[in-house]
Length: 535
Image (tube, rainbow, N blue to C red; front, side, top):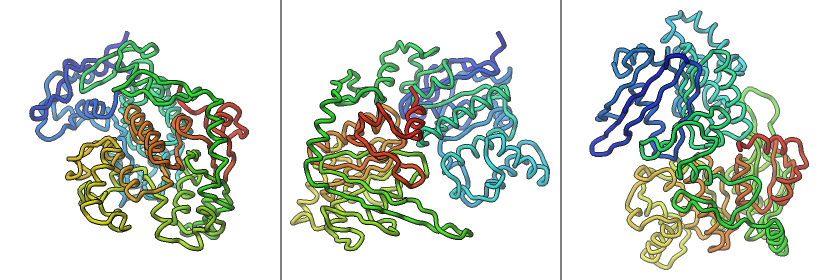
């Protein structure tokens, strides 16, 4: 048994009167993997940052952190170890990468800082670092916004490896990535660990994902370890509840278990699912898309790219139509074209028989609303939640007076499970799950008939995700809503969708009732998507 590379003993962190980490203990040997799992706010990221001395101002840290026999709480040791011996992959590439600089600049600057190389030597090394993470040297001259989500994540991994570290800390490195790119990133981390004999700390909220990379884990809840060791058979009720929150692929539940209500609900028989769809399809379509095509011109290149290529489908009142595919498949562009946010090249978008591409009326815009992927960017930080909800009501003159509209604000907040006093607070004063509820309330403020949900739960932990999915189902029944539900997570789509449209390279490959598609997928692409879902 090798000596531990990293040892943590009775580590605690206090910020003011709040204890955010308490009594954390574990050790990690060279070449070993450790998973850290828990819901949002459990202390996962804070623990990783505390190990490296990246703590909030005013934080009081107690306990011991030893790295290869050195006191890692010593600022001088931290400066010597960070980057060169311990590399970190941060959660959000968009925040970790400077939008003003190219990929080459990021790599060259990091290599010069950590390895003391000249500019010429660092440029030669930069291309090799990209190849190690399966990226072409062609992207060296590209800026972060010119890279896909998977490419940005690989670039972050390359940056974390620049100092040839012994330990790699990966903080939610696959959040919001589609299942196939997620599988590629996990495979890359496994390969790098074997080739470099790396130790690995992998932080996630997704237990099935964690099991693909390591069997040894810490389960955190409110800053404390509730379970430690192998998770092949979860023993603690909290760990079991986290596992139960994820939608299963092999059956459909009426409601997903949550941490507050962990007991599973009734399984909806397949026959009942088919009968519901048949009943919905007896009505005229609410939305019909016919041969819709959307094209873009790329700078420096001739011709145009067809982001959406002759897509056709119907969506019936009360139905949830799931739209799935990898990043770049055209899902979001299709949704934005339907809403008129992106101009169509050709085709039709029929709303109850009227072509919206020819005649976009105020009334139709109100009846089709969108829940965006990132609620923080979708909400104006300068408006209180009450003002944000009131604005569209006044714009569309939905109520006879301002007082009546303000009363509806309180009703909307109650519908999404928020207190009335939240109307006077700003977006930054809410958690991620609460902001997503506010984004849903904002979409409902216009009294829509169709909601376009664009990856609206992709960045949420499994427990909050389950709450939001249950909420969407409840609202659909209460308000007779129709959903276009866009996601890369096929287990989530399985829970919500009546039918599923599979997109690849802008084309509609497959459209089928959800039970049929999951049981007998017709396309190899669909089978690959299903096979990539963590179980």
